[in-house]
Length: 85
Length: 161
Image (cartoon, chains in turn red, blue):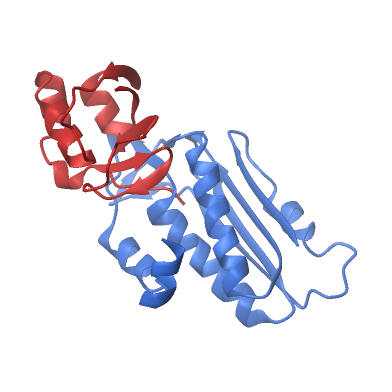
């Protein structure tokens, strides 16, 4: 499945780009699975996802937990805990 | 009910925006205005600037979702939330939350609720610039605890999810 990924703050800095569209191989069911797979794609990804439990995710612009399914997602974003306000 | 949610790079006029919620009305008995301001000192060191990155689209929809929740929980007659992004200098306003109601309880509570959620769920990320360079600001546990005070009882949450 083809998926748009977006990265923010230091996740974006470590990976080296703000977004990309990639083909996700079958067998990746959840956001947690996706983070594990992304971490395996290269050093910069491994560095970004080193502490996976610190990373937050949004599927189609809604906050989700790591066990959320990615099945019909169009866009998934990864970012550190937010510091707005 | 007048509800305004706006993201912008440029500074805003807090007094002017808040006044819009009461202008010409006779039903508003309480107007609460909160302004978040960029400080000039962080951990004892002077700061040169704050830079706010945001997730366009999601930032607006998250804030709008919380404004809708505030309207369901309290009898509000008007809400305005303005949030800047980009480079902000010490002394400048970052965020405005203004709430209007007949009586003060709703205006105070809704204003605090919205700020606690802006601190934890609105997709913005701050970088602070000091003499040594720029570093990302860490989220605070105290902010999560503050937001946690507002979680609706279990049966309401299950319906919402």
